[in-house]
Image (cartoon, rainbow over all chains, first blue to last red; front, side):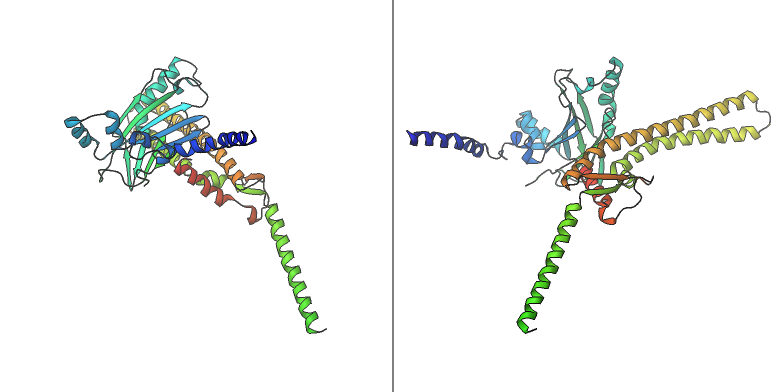
Length: 193
Length: 171
């Protein structure tokens, strides 16, 4: 009986260790899973006074896989992605269940001003330093989620000057004029090895 | 005193000196719980402050040029014969308005930069204090809050390096 109890206890203690070891590292072959994992270095998060900025680098392989194209469409899309560097920048407020655009607003005018900023002007406040080049947004759009989620997402693309694929560190900067948090920066290593 | 006694004495003295040095080092290390930081230097050396000022400068320069242009026109017209008094009056008002706008925007910009910089610096200074096991960081500002500090307690350079690294790497 004692032996059974001991074996049972041992199993209880060993189970979490076993589960942890099974979890392991994300599979580099599965780019959709790998790119969003913290280990990849392609996803960074900066928190300033409850404002959370999530930066997700989307390499071409990630975009092609997520779009699920094939044949001619895939080949054309591959060409379009040449020299392009894409990011998602997500904004949210910690412990705030609605869209960050609604956080602390006094009225609809303020909401509309914020929306107008993210739709039309924020692109001018995002830059990418790649090597010696400071790049401005080549393509930009703001995914307004109509308050369906507590997170808003900016999709921004930059065109590299002399490279088809980034190999050096990507220094992304966003000066969010709505929340006055100063300039938020992050460094993403496109291929951490 | 024979050789053996001399050797014993030397060993005892060496042990005393070593113990003294060790105690001194430990005491000195244990006291290293307070740091003094030049707050003005920290603020001015923060990369984000400099970048925000550069961004604001372009707009403020434009406003200054506008005010200068009106002033030039006003100077020329005031020396020209036959210019109506009403026209000059309108230019004076335009110049004063441009100048007031420039001053007000300059002040707003300064205040905004100040708030944004301290909003970012404060949590990083806390982090630095915890990392360095400090109990207190005194912010000297040249206004007499700190009258004297031993260089040993001055952590300004280390803190500037720390905050700028955090800013550039986005932690």
